[in-house]
Structure formats: C-alpha cells, structure tokens
Length: 351
Image (spheres, rainbow, N blue to C red):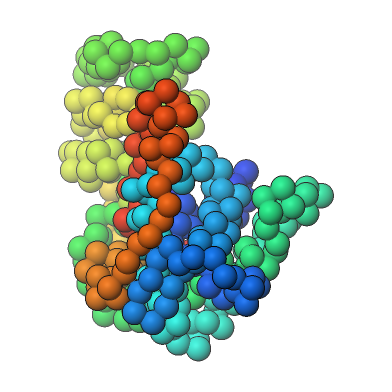
C-alpha cells in the first residue's frame, strides 16, 4: 500500500501541482508583499531584526486557505496559529540569509508553480483569486519565500551527506515484487467493518493460502485493494520506501515465498507474500532517488532549525485570541484538534 506521507510540491488544491504541503504553506511570511509600504497594522510577531504584522498574517492565511482549503478550520485555533506564526518568522529570517543561487532557483520554481495553478484553474483562475481576496503577486511572493529557504537548505546538502543518509535508509530503496490481500475496514460496498471482523476475515484468508489456495484467485475474491485486486494482488518491482511503515517493514523482513500473518496498517489488514526482493546499491540510484534523499535532508535541517535555533531570535507573539470566541459561538464546544504544525514536511521531495 502506498505511503500516505505528503509528497511535496506535487499535489495540492484540486489536483493541481501546487508548491507546498500545508505544514510548509503555513511557514512563510509576506513582509515583502506589495502592501508592505501601506501596512500600519499592529505587529503580531516580533523577533530580532524584524516583525510580522496583522495585515501580513491575514494575507498569508488567505493564501493557505486557497491552497489547502481542507485545513482552513485549523486557522481558527490559537495554538496552531501561533505555531504557524513562529514558522513564518523562521522563513522570513532564513530567506534573508539565503544565497543568490537559492534565490535564483526559487524564482524559477515559483513562476512554474504559479503557472501550474493558473493552468489547473483555467477560466476560473481570476475569479478564484478575487474571491480569496488575493492577487497573483501575493501567491508568487508567498511561494517564493518558502522556495528560497528550501532551495538554500537543499544547496547546503553535500554528496557525503546523501550517501550517509542512504546507508541509514537503504531498505527503502530495495525493490520487491509481492502479492497481498487487503481486508479493509470497509468492505467493497463501503460498509464499515469492525477491527475484529477485519482481522477475523484476514485470518481466514491466511488459512486458505496456507492450505494451498491460489494467491491470485484469493486476492481477486477477497481483496479490498482496488489497485492490485484484478492483478491477483501483485505489486511488481516497486521500491519499498513507497509503502506505509508497517507494510514496508513486513515487506523488508518477511521470508520469501512465505504467507505472512495479518499485517495491520491504516488501511486494514494485509496478508502478504514477497516473491522477490533486490537491494539497490547507491551507485544504481536514479537522480530522482538521490534528489528525494537530498529533499529529506533539507527537511530535517529545517525542522532542526525550528526546534532548536528559532528561540535564538527571541520571538514574541501577540495574536488576538480566536478559539475561545469560536468555542462560545458553537455552544462552548472545543475546537477540533489540529495536526502538528512543527515540521515543514514539504521539503521532503521537491522534485
């Protein structure tokens, strides 16, 4: 089963090739946008050498809602907004320290991303921006700052670091052919299954396979994985790093041509058989695979900065409260918990 980890820069906002995943989108200030000269609003964040104003933060919020509308609800939660604002401080500061080479590449990529959005929205592009109270320049400026920081981090990654990271994660690049039967937490008709019922059925499938049943025929009969069901549950010659963690580990360690016990993932229970598994040496990696490693290292460097170094800027937050008012408006109910905003995962695979 494919990993549900965000693959940056590829898919966001009605299948467009947008620039960034939400956690990264939430990380960029717009102090240099077209409205800066007119901006007399109060500072919502200050730090050594700069500030972010209420007007700038509101503009960034509109960009976030445009590019990731499914996350808009979290922007009403104070704790999450504060985390976002701290990331904005980091990106504004780091973009000012970036090299000219990083800025040049970021400019090129920002142009490409805006064009992708324009193409994807087609005739609705202008009306969509108008409805969001944004201009193309706002979006471009927003993306440019994020991409500048990312490119600067990326350019600092050395070949030796890439090779060392590969050695830590080389199992992800192992290529395997396997078969599996997925017993999902929903059946083919969309009816919910309890965890216990899914596990029971998965054990029944394993018993049939252990008894000599044909794997392909069994997968076609039982599997809820529409991507592999008609091919008899086969997933051929795929790098294991693309799978969710539990499935990946099982595929990496299961003895060849052996029927596994049910393996639980977010999708349900899998009964697996690995038919072949071939390690990929470093010198056989594609440029894209090496780029993925570099992207991961850049992401780690950025996350490390946010966790360890940001405090050196003496950041002070002064955001107006919103969650209490939102809760009162809903009869006192608590807002939905937001996902973690601490790690800007969009630097994982900027290919």
